[in-house]
Length: 597
Ligand code: ATP
Ligand code: MG
Ligand code: MG
Picture 1 (cartoon, helix red, strand yellow):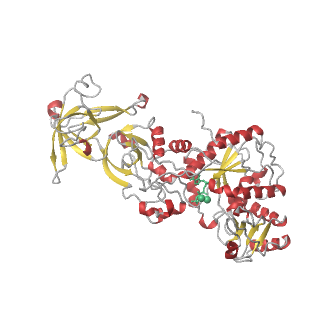
Picture 2 (cartoon, rainbow, N blue to C red):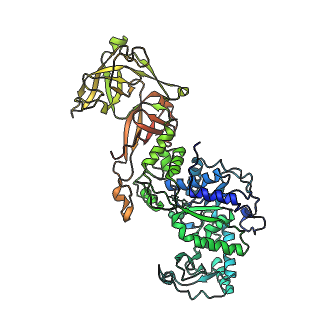
Picture 3 (tube, rainbow, N blue to C red):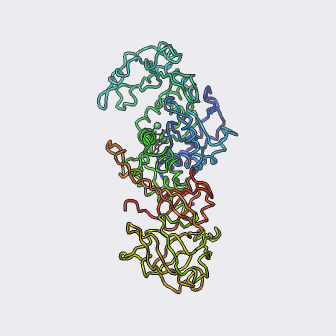
């Protein structure tokens, strides 16, 4: 394996391991209510990362980067990466999303690498955690902040709170509730918890600094009242922690060392550190706490990654569902045929940087697909736009119009051990419509009257003409076979040709439905500058054709991938394809980058 590309996160981890930053962290004595993880015996030298999706939608290509980054850092440095469902927002979260996220992470190949976490012996992989399992501890942490004078219950209206927060350059003003005593705050907070206040009547806020230049430090909200049934905790709670309060605690309880997130959270880091410092002071957490690091999110051209907008595409039926092969969801990319290897290579090549704004060309994903699939994908012939070709001297050469001439081709040109494909040539074969021209344009070396071409793995033929339909299009091409020119026989090179075309025998070809996909959006940045992304949907993002494919493809199983010679990479659709029965293939990518040309 090639040396891992260096990046700033790897350097930080190497340094932490060398300096033993986390080696002194001793977890044994920490209070454990709601936080059993914190008391488990751990190898202190290990690093811990986490991938923390909120189960409010399907994972997308941006998440693939975060997944790769967190899991591969843990793997490379002998650590552990947690899959954590960040489920602190009951209204938007659903079991369906938990299931799909779990499936996707497993599909990407990150379930088995981390089965040996000594903190959770015998626990099934992957290392799965739910933020909602820590609600008890979070509540206790909130009471501690109140008791120590670091939090207060604010009963201003949301409008008042917004108005007193100030703005960039303008300090905020203190809430009239800010000077309540800890005892009053504690009593009021418990009333919030016990359901004695209506939704929205009060919030718990950290007491930090209403004049801070960082607006995130102007007494951020820690808890709100929300009567909503939670997918995990049911109706146990009517108050829920805010993300900014919950997330650092989740990291700490799971003994995460390097908490890696995207750059939007950089301004939250001071609060992250503030909260960690307070809870360590109070003995609720053990130092050193986890540290947050930010990297630039992945932006991919021709793709949108906002979950809200993806949901809109699904709900308004612009696509067939979350796993429509045109969707940038990982479920969609999987169905389209992209492989875990290709996604990993794509993420790795896109780099890890501290500054944002760069866009990665979608073509890089196709390049990663080709680079990983070309060495392993079995080959096959398929005719996507079939036109009948009749060899008029067939009986003369072989004694009968019904004769079938067996042909073979390697499954993979560089891997003889992968074996041979068998198919047959007969009097009638299917060719690509685009391989025939009555009047050849300059540089066209395929079929036109009088020209010789080779039917790949078969014989050289000479085109003699074509019949036309009412619209003037070729309806059937005719040719004569040139004897003794079969591929792989001594006479194969006796007739020189400039053109070799792919084909499928009419006798043993199988019909198949083939979905030819293109970009979902015509613009590189579909939602840039507030543009309505629906106005730049590509009307030609799906073209479904009835193709004829070689008989070896009858055995294709769902998700088997192939290179269709001359056409590109295709996958047997994981939902619609049935081996031997109903053949359905999706084009993943062409042989080379030709989009927009
Ligand atoms: P949304 O804001 O649309 O709900 P999200 O990006 O916040 O989605 P989460 O489920 O919270 O989705 O994200 C889980 C993890 O994936 C976070 O750590 C987040 O930083 C990371 N992530 C999300 N999008 C990208 C991206 N485009 N590039 C890299 N990492 C990403
Ligand atoms: Mg989020
Ligand atoms: Mg987000």
